[in-house]
Image (tube, rainbow over all chains, first blue to last red; front, side):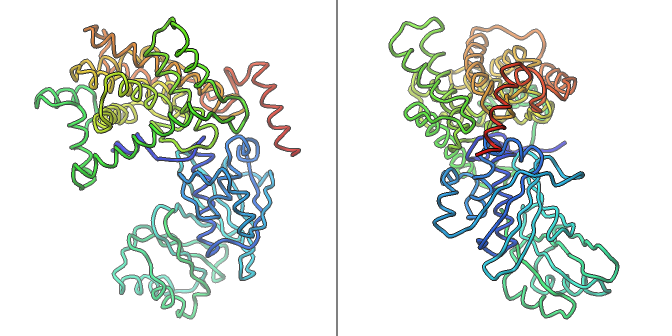
Length: 223
Length: 295
């Protein structure tokens, strides 16, 4: 049986009206911002399922943009996030859609152009009580919950990469809490999601990037 | 330290001759490995957010995001101040504040989920009222919140505090039961009387469905917060008078869990049954969705 804290029962402090459709949406926006490495230049947000039907009444649209702006779930500026986004020069568009079978009813897909011009797609779902999961990056399957600091690599699926990455983390005394590897095809590009107890500093990232078979690594702060 | 039944919780408090809030605070400090003072400070912060929400909702009501509610808390407050009400001064005061907080939530204001966003009006509604009426300090009210959360933890463990799992009885029902128990302690009642108040509220919302019109946290959620606050006050008075629940509180909580499991999916937050499926409910949902697509 799960042990609850008093603050699980009386909390979180949040902007209403819904933990799944508002607070969860803010956290998805924050994760998308973290994966994109900051406020994107342009974003098209595809809303799926219940998100596509009731987003306006739950402020899901404002919450997603608020998250991209880096707001916390209890930030009252979320109500004005469209205006603030315009002031900050974010070009955005929200489109109710159907992502197809196999997606959670509260799913969202961000089609992002970063300030560096990188094109990126990020899909995630709000799974209840403010809990979320990022399910895809660039249509590749991953799983990232955003409760812990995390690393997402893009690397070539060949022997030894995982142990090299783990070795570097161990060398910096960073403890791995959860870890999963995802790939579409054998020996092609794959992703590793490593959730850690300690924050991963930029010098550690640089060291990981030096591994020849690692093409990219992103550090994601918890949201 | 943790408690899996109200009986254990009451026994611990009575054995040591302390309030349930003391037991709950110590449990939290021990589990989180921080000082009692820090835990108290954190709860005080939650309380101040709740209080702010109630005051803002009464003073400057805003239309909800879906446009279905807004201003009802203020309306009742004005009526209460001008009239000799039927239900009485305190109940109406608590209900107007509960409505106000639910409206703040529905208009994207800042609230504390208690235990959920949909049921966030009940605890601030009754606690702000007893604070004003019994002249209690913010610290004392924060103690009441510890007692409320101790009951909430047990309800979450033995039953549910999610409308999608257990219907509205698990949200507004749990909130009302938690509030009833807190009220008893704040009014000077015993730990076992707090347990009785929890039982009275749950027994009277047993089976309450979650049927939000258009899927929004507006109708009937705000008015269920109102009634939850009223129930909590009446239940606390009954318990303080010495009335006992024939069915022990732990069994009532278990029954609430079982009833929740027995509810069809259409009555568990899916907006497919109950008030959501009435002619007006469907019409509002359609109008709302239509607006969403064209603007």
